[in-house]
Image (tube, rainbow, N blue to C red; front, side):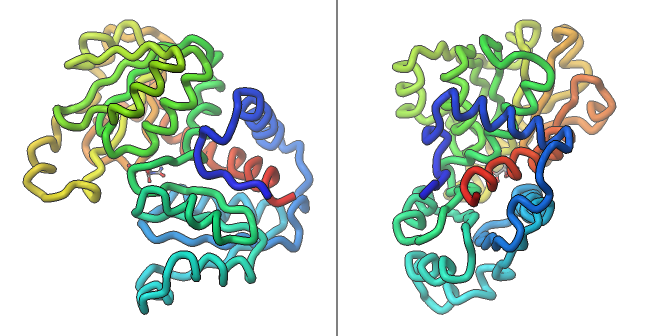
Length: 298
Ligand code: NCD
């Protein structure tokens, strides 16, 4: 059985093959009934717009359907049911489960109890592998991924999209520029692991210091919901903002990505700039997740 829990579950070949498949899907070269009659359970215990809707759109475009509980309050976990039991039960109703949960490790636990494939759609501050695959796909639309200079900006401590993407990029010889407010640096275990894998990680105090060297500027939201208290959140809020002026010295081909939602990290004036790719990026969630569903459900 094929679970997708962490981007580390993929080797470089598997990622490249999945991105190729997503490209074919984007070019409309796929069987619209590839998952006819299959049911995807969408088990989201945290807010979501893009991830949830693009998975639902993906299964629908392949001829399958999705089922879900409306919200955590609406399902039996509100009555004290364990995640293990919920997942065991849901396995009886669907052919695969996509799960998002506020606790790190929850998707791995779900996979232990599920009798159908589980896809991690975000586990607390842990991992977000489907986001990483669509991030890589979006980069590959503009440049070869190998050897890029990429800055990860923002909440690198709690941001699961940053964690997964950094891990994946260690397979592509990328140079990582890390820029975060104090206290929100990449977890030390993760950066040690990446350095062990040969990745070059350079920390910077400001985006200005490095902007002219970058191929990709990956901006993230401060993960307010993971902060222990609101005072520590307000200490770092609004500490960085990407503006057209900031990009004045950027390479012509620099692309700006953001997993979204954005709060105030990206000036809306940037939206019209040829550098801005975050809306294409979110749209790419559909073909990439279609390729993922075919991989685990076919
Ligand atoms: C991200 C997430 O949920 O981790 N959103 C998404 O899936 N596109 C990023 C975020 O919430 O900041």
